[in-house]
Length: 444
Ligand code: NAD
Image (tube, rainbow, N blue to C red; front, side):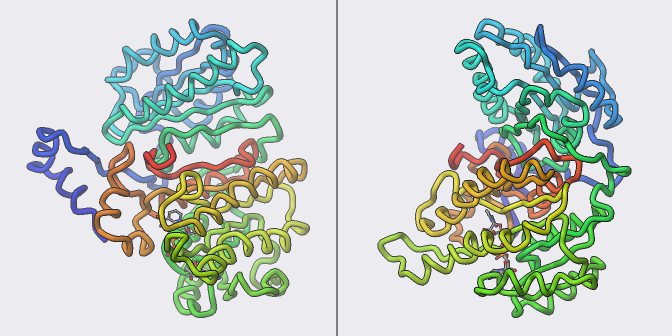
């Protein structure tokens, strides 16, 4: 369902009206176009005294072909190495860097702060100062206008390497992260993984299984992974065979008709993953999901169980079936939801299942890290799909507006985030949940 308010607020007359009335002022967010530069303009790189990530950041920016200019008048991005900040007083350097520059940040600009993780601090004061970065970034994300975003990247000791930073910078600085703001991404010290020969096709030679691929977000994920070079195995229920086949044919992949809740779904999936379909995948995207909303008092056992079956139990079962055969560099991405982080009326079943996925990635990621495998989740907010078109009008309007970007996201926004987490070069990101919600107030 079209967002008429967005169309109105970005029109000539509407823009003036919403400004005068103090209403939310969304802008049309640019999305990535193949061949577009990572950063849309010059990048200003700053550093707090004692910072130890600047060299790696500069090298990674150079590798991204970003133009680093100290005195850019209208920067497309402000990148700040805050790893040296060790006390509350030293946070002044954050203010000193951003205060004079934040107004000049271009439309759709990016603020990226790179800090050290509070749990690795050696003193209480250092932990407090490191944690302060989180509040700063979340507030900046809420203050920025014109589709600009703010993010925090926290480095574990040893992760201050250009190879660990590059895929994350490429994602955060580009239009691929259009609907991601106010988020923290942690980079671990372990092997960041192989860098692709061609960053426009980082998944070349890889096979990706995408569940729930017949429509909505899953179809966008399938298309985006195929765009990035992967051979896609598109899985959905046998009832969706026609759209599934059409998609798989268009993408040069294969259709895998399967109800993931079948008790023998794991075995049947393994049977279907023959050489002909592409064999054991390198990337597994658990996207299939359902809602059966009712308040708990009105929810029968079937509604409860069916949601847990699809959204969590099937994910565990398929993961168990595939995990022994996954090779080094494999990527698993689950689809959680901000409902799973914040809770939502009428969604005790759905939120329990989606929070369960957060638990799954947090526990499984570190367990498979040694094999070079990562397990992460995306947590979409309000995304314009059939699922959200079906919610009552008032709830839909609230969902669209109650985030820093004042609009709903598009399936492509979730897909780009999945593609980033699926990249062979994203090995430093593991066990995490990345919200794709425009910094929604829900659970913020
Ligand atoms: P959708 O309903 O449009 O698509 C879901 C797909 O999953 C469908 O093609 C469906 O046939 C498939 N599926 C359902 N049960 C299955 C089963 N047993 N076996 C195989 N396939 C099955 O949903 P969507 O809006 O595209 O959402 C995709 C994912 O994103 C879901 O996990 C959803 O919970 C999550 N999500 C969506 C939003 C949103 O705003 N749309 C927000 C947060 C999270």
